[in-house]
Length: 265
Length: 242
Image: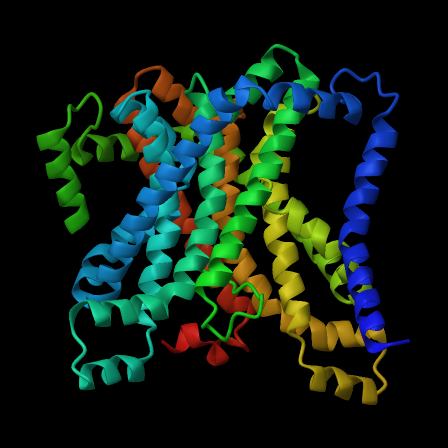
């Protein structure tokens, strides 16, 4: 067999290995639920049919788009504040000393608890939901950036000083060096942000994915509800993959990036 | 301390005490709560749900992680499915399961599912990290599969499990509280939500304050346990050297 043929065959085998189990599981779900008359566990066929009916319609504009907008704005705010704050804290031991008890506390406070607090402090509204997402996603980004900035290679820093690099060039160097940690934080933040988006929509909203799913559940529209659950799963997956793509692109220079996820605190 | 003063000033100057009570009001309330059996029952329930969930996640995660991780062919088949399932937020389970299980069970399951992913992936990373030389040496000594797992793989995975422990503690607490907030599962989350609905703002802030304290305490415990577990390893860790 020619070398190319073997490579192609191996690629095919890898693809088969990757797709085999998910397809088998889906098929199993399909067959097992085919004759299901259980009200709460409708057949997969009904769920998929509901999926097309519900989500490829104005519900997408009315619910999915607002959800994604909140998620985007919240994460954006968390990113800007987290990187700026993490940079400042990482550079200044004095600031770190002052802030660290508060930071330890803020990190230990479970994020969903922010929801009732903001409900009282800010009230129900678009702002509250965005602030919930931003506040929850802030800490992983901030703390990881701070650690990353502190860990910047001493030699690199001193070299930059010796070359009399100043201002933005040096700041860019530090941020570049810290960026693998920033991405580690961002990855954690994304997961948290999705959870907070759904929870805040479940608790205090009139639109959005979380709200719609609960609404379906309350009106016993079970296939529709399951389709929402499915959509949320797909959304989580797609967003995580997108972030991974951005990360891979942004960290091309980082030779430690061999697809291994570093365990982060 | 500085932060506490800052908070006090900001709360007094910029906010209505009906929305953001200053710390001087919240703190006594929180201390009062510490003498209230209702608070302790709720804390106990939250911890119980979180603990049960973590227990399930640990057993399932370690078992599955080792099972999959030690068979490369199996890992190749399963990894895409794991990658697909992991980013699915576990709270989607709430509406899906609310008809099938009671809310306490769902809360436990919520905790278990989220923590399970952390444990499984940490174990998988750990198994991948096993030193091939150590493994070959063990083979040369004719150690059996079980002996190799116990003496070579397990010690390699342990530090990864230490990290998992720290991550799991905060996630477990957060989800146990979510169960209370969203579904009213008995515990601290439910207590907080009820005081919010009842308009007992100071009481709610006090509860949140204590919840944060609980989080700090659990985090400390997890770090302590990690150090205990890895006392033989700590010296080689950059984190401890810093």
